[in-house]
Image (cartoon, rainbow, N blue to C red; front, side, top):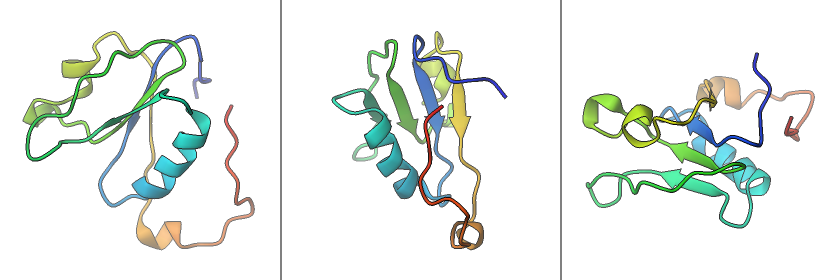
Length: 102
C-alpha cells in the first residue's frame, strides 16, 4: 500500500451506496478550509473542475464512461483511494471508531 503524500493532490473515488456520507464527514475534518473539493454532478450537468494542488482532495463520483472520470478532470493526479463497503459491513461494530490520517 502506498503512503499518502501531502505534497501531491489526492482523489477519493466514492462508489455509490458504500458509506459516502460517513467518509465525507471524515474527509471534511482531514481536509479543512477549502482543501476538500466535492466532485458530484449538479443539476444533471457535469461536475465542476477544481484547481487541485498539494494537500487537497477531490472526492466524489467519477465516471469515465459518462465523461467525468478522473483522467478527464485531473490527469496530473497520481494518488487515489476508494472505500469499498456495503451496508451490512458498515453496520458491524469495529474495534476502533475513529479513523486516523496517515
